[in-house]
Image (cartoon, rainbow, N blue to C red):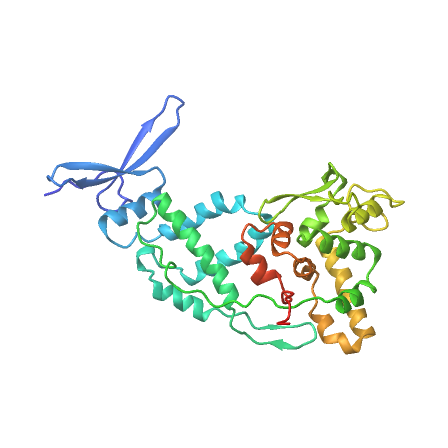
Length: 365
């Protein structure tokens, strides 16, 4: 007959608790699994010092469900992912992926790694929908399929799973691998000169400056608003892209002709303003323009342009500030030059996503 345990009565069977008093006076607590090796000899397998983690490891050794009240290994891996990996990402990515994590955790709540199969992942992909909502006008927007959101969330889930394998939370194969993604159609809108000037003509001065700088530099809105006089070095506009960290130097003078480029002339004009500011894009009072301020000004200019040009209203309303970047890529003759300006190492991305007009070709005769 086994002797009744006198310590660790709150622990599952075959889990042991060891305590040591350190020189500092602090009490160290460790947990072990009371098991047997292949020869039947008793061995104690270390489970760590965290009781929740220890119970999860105990459950894996016992091949039993984890005790009630203990965190699942998936939850523990999510906690570590949020603490260790998420802070290394860009602020915007952190904000977006925080919502994605909430959705993924809710969908797979109660499951363990070994229970999730590619079929479950495919069900998530096919069933992902937006939330129904009511606009301020009272219009009801029904739920609809969200294929792009599903792709982004499953990409995050795949990265999380690979990290969990590295950390030892599971040895199960990544179920996202081999599951096809939803087909995505790149945005095809092209802001031709009629649309561009219709909105620009209605824009506040600081918005006109932002549109010009975004088009001539080919950079993302957030990067455009961060440009300052400190980025003007050796007759070039230095860029460190916020999304990718890519470093660029956009020349302000044509090396072959010695002529100032349109970007160089724009920079000269911005620096010659009466109200001086370190930022290239700012309000007449010298205040730097934020993304929220940019959005408000652009929406107002777009509404005014649509009212002034009813024949173009539908296309004007489809115009977004971010379309300045593909407009730049589309209007540069050589694909290599366009890819270099946008900071793409893969020309195919520039060609399929950002070049939104056909290539110039010669006729048969």
